[in-house]
Length: 243
Image (cartoon, rainbow, N blue to C red; front, top):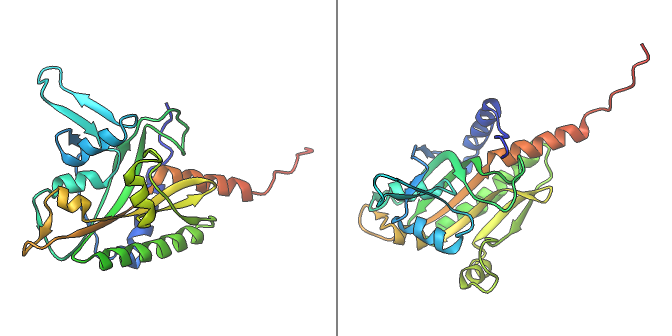
């Protein structure tokens, strides 16, 4: 099992770098447990769509207690905001450990547990949510390039979906997901949920109007790993010692 690939200093560095981007200005940092009841709609949907990736927990004493270890940082936010009435524009950020079962593990690229930070936007119009994702793609790509990394922003679909699944087709047709790819590895992504998540969780404006949502997530372990690879690649070779 791979160890964590991110140390506390790097973690703080990434936190500060993201917080300094204009697209994330005003984000409110909230804390949630990475434990979701299986009865929570998004947890249930995840297990139906990606049964091979979910980590489930149960209680041997209270057998009715069944949970999913959250595979992403936005799910706990939606769980915590279920039934909430929010301002017409609300930006939340949440950082936590995420958990996914994979067919193989490798430190820095594919881990059981990994650190992620997400920014989740709730907006009153689809245009506002979509425009935010465009800004995020531009500003985050600029940030990563400023770190000396070669990054491509690529349209994507969730690889967990079967190629014939209508969800994947809709995601592709509507350009709802993009990934930040470095060295063939996606270190982050931006997703436009439209009204799907807020509707499922009954999250509305303070006056009862529909809300749209979008999110950006950055995998800290993967980014730290890519930075270490880049650093090793540019490090001068050590001259042999003749002493």
